[in-house]
Image (cartoon, rainbow, N blue to C red; front, side):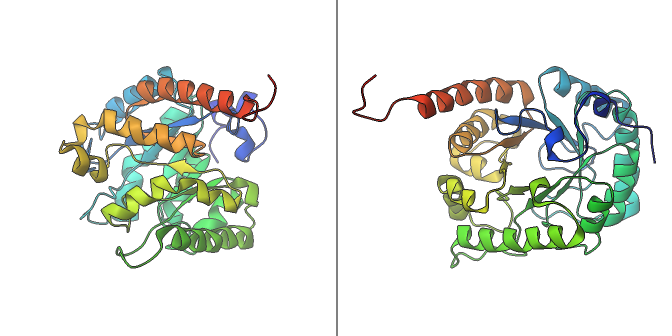
Length: 292
């Protein structure tokens, strides 16, 4: 095992409780793609020095989590081997964990990568297949007492289904897998998977009905940053989708999202603070017709 990650020196024991502020304010997860082919920033941070510089920049802008990934999941991507994925992410995680004041998550669905990343200093597993693709990944997370983010996914979109009903059923399976492996339910975060296994209309419907996921009683992470859905609405390339992304995340926060996963940290930290203030004000307001 590596040395204790820097942020754990002053935070609670392992578990979702380590995410300071969760449930009291919206947390911002900054995306760090150590890949040559991600849809938005592929190749920009494949170099170790540039990756660490970008992580430091996101932390300075107010990120609560840095999410490190080594395999693109863009539409039409080609899978990479665990060895190639690990060669991309492990040096970044090992160096970043020495000084990072915030948690690092590993974006992978491979158990072997998750195990090595957690040993290197990551403390959260972010699985785009919701613990369903690699049967060992839940056990790995349990062994390290690592919280998991389980994302809804499908091999192909089906326009005939009720996407929210499908997501709820999927998440219940993921939670069962987590519990069977020894992960406490309190350490499970759910992600509706915008852009994964959904039609354009289903992506919009997911945002419009996001509040329905509250039936599961788990925090929701929303990942819309620069996604194709936004590009289709605005007819803009990924690097010009910031304002559209902000709109989706404000809507998501108002619908109950607890964490937003983004490329552009500072604008979202500021937008989240304002949106949280509006949400708190609404919650504290007297019922209509009540005496002030």
